[in-house]
Image 1: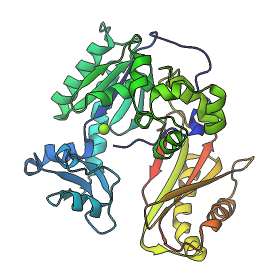
Image 2 (image 1 turned 120 degrees about the horizontal axis):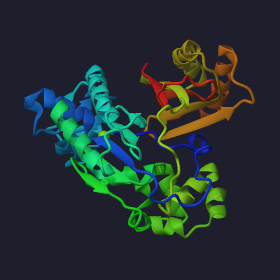
Image 3 (image 1 turned 60 degrees about the horizontal axis):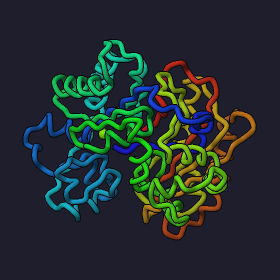
Image 4 (image 1 turned 135 degrees about the vertical axis):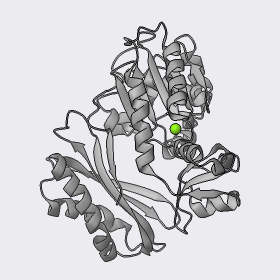
Amino acid sequence: MSTPPLTASTMQSEAPAGGPDLGRRKVIHIDMDAFYASVEQRDDPALRGKPVAVGGARARGVVAAASYEARKFGVRSAMPSVTAMRKCPALVFVKPRFDVYREVSRQIRAIFARHTPIIEPLSLDEAYLDVTENLERVATATEIAEEIRKAIRAETGLTASAGVSYNKFLAKLASDHRKPDGLFVITPRMGPAFVETLDVGRFHGVGPATTAKMNRLGIMTGLDLKAQTLAFLTEHFGKAGPYYFWIARGVDERPVRADRPRKSLGAENTFLEDIFTHDAARAALAPILDKVWRAAAQAGIRGRTVTVKVKFADFRQITRAHSEAQPVAARADFERIALALLRPVFPAPRGVRLLGVTLSSLGDPPAKSEAQLSLGI
Ligand SMILES: [Mg+2]
């Protein structure tokens, strides 16, 4: 499953402020293997061993998750279903069952909670755990990770991969290193060298656009990134610069946040027919704005920053954001800002297939909440 990349705004308060913090913390990253697809194969024996895509087979559908059998053909999550079918004609499409995925997610979080209260979920199937002071007094973080993997297999019938290290950045790289059904440990002694060898595109928080930009600047690997000065990285990547500077050295002091405040509230919609004009966008946007505004009101929260996301018919995607000095106070202001952000997009010669709106920089976060609440529409 994909995770939303870290954005500059979420990292602002979390960028490493000081020097290395080697070896003092024990962080585990747990990531279920091909989660949605594995749940479907677990529950329907006829799907086992077959290339399976969870998602819609219809013309405009997108693959939400692909089984490992499907991945061998190059099928990936977020890929248009038509592309996936072309790559793998035998691909079996299965409708997602989010209720079941949420139930499994509750099960695995209960397993995590036996070992530590400091659990930061990234999505239904992924979480960071800080086990520096673990409840069971198991000797090492590696043993805890193995116990968790064993319990997940026994209690859910599914496999998970685990990464163990001394910070979040490295733990996540580690869990990816022996997927599926694997465990990998990055020790303080290994950390800096491990990072040097990897392509920057592998790093959490470096998405496709940032990877392309880094490559244009001659930064291909962790070693290349490490050769840049803090000033250079800040000049080119703004607030994310310090994060990149430190991760290139295997340093990441972001804490595992059990009660991570909600960072944004958003909704989006894919249209049956592409949109070409600003007027059509105004009409199409109304239910999306309603949904976000209602959810924000229900949660009693307000935001200063409005972000619009536009996906064109050719799947090119852009985002535009605007921040007010004060939280957006009225639905009319929310709409005005969103429409102003969309004005330069139209007329759109090739059409727009998806619009999304997000309200962020939220104040008064509730005590317990998910990092991001995404609303289907
Ligand atoms: Mg996963």
